[in-house]
Image (cartoon, rainbow, N blue to C red; front, top):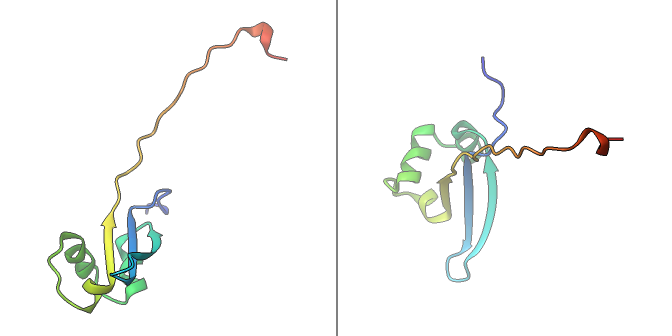
Length: 84
């Protein structure tokens, strides 16, 4: 069984007032966590992401699937004399 992912894959934006663009943002690691937070099914989450769900949730929340961060490494060469 896999452990918990180290990255956030979903962002949930709550629109307080569409006219003012006040946003509340919360990040989740899995779609199950988002579904549990909103008390809806996982299928509803994917439909909200695709924009294919029309309900009260659609008017209050925006869900976005985030890109996985790219791992980057930087190699540094140091002379042995510089290490103390």
